[in-house]
Amino acid sequence: MKINLTKLALTATLGLAITLTLFACEDKEKKQTTAETAAAAAAAAEAEKAAQEAAVAAEADRAAKEAEAAEAYRAAAQAAAEKVVKSSLTDSRDKKTYKIIKIGNQNWWMAENLNYETKSGSWCYENKADSCKKYGRLYDWVTAKTVCPAGWRLPFRDEWYGLIMLADGSENAGSKLKSNSGWNDYCDSAGEDRTCFDGGGSDNYGFSALPGGRGSSDGGFYDVGENGYWWTAEDNSDGAYARKMNLYHGGGSDYVDEENSAKEGVGFSVRCILN
Image (tube, rainbow, N blue to C red; front, side, top):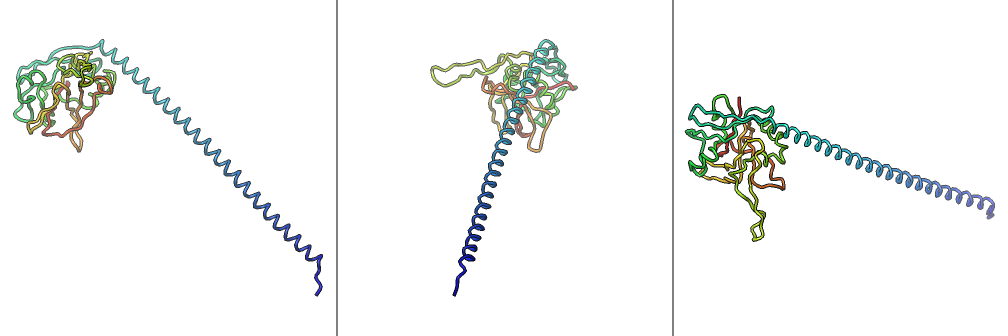
């Protein structure tokens, strides 16, 4: 049997060439895939960088707008402080007289907590007449809705909001709306080196918010001298809206917070607004 060495050598050479070609193709594909992966990673990194830069710019824009709004509130508050009109209101039902104020273009507000005795749905703190005389009565929301003198009513949420904005915004309004007396002092610790402060405010506009605390139909009373709560005219499926101030200065405690509470069985103070 004769072997054609030339043909065999040619076949081997051709096979090697095909193999080398296949390897070259695979290597080219790998390099192309690697390049594509690197390009995709670079594009993703660039997109992430752009997104981060956009987020930083958006946050800076938001902060600038908030600062601008805060400055506008401060300017409005300063202008309002120069336009406070004070007068008085006599409740024809029991002849009690209340201070009333008009701040800037706001409506007329009572500058004292209402103290009209109802047959039900209201209490003096700890059932003491002196507390009613000092802080006004506490009313459940159902009673508060109809307890204001003729021509007056509970304020809506946006009316409270407008008042708070005139008083330098929700973060600072508490210190400017609170009475400068009637609030407990508070201390920063319980130790001998503690520092104590007056819990009252500067009462810039004569609103004279007082800490009448809160009451309950089960006979419980809480927070007098420390917290004041005032009903709004609006409710929701879970209860009714109110506003709250407390005695603590700093650390966000000069906020005028919005509360949500049960409509019945809980007693808060009432400030009426001209209808």
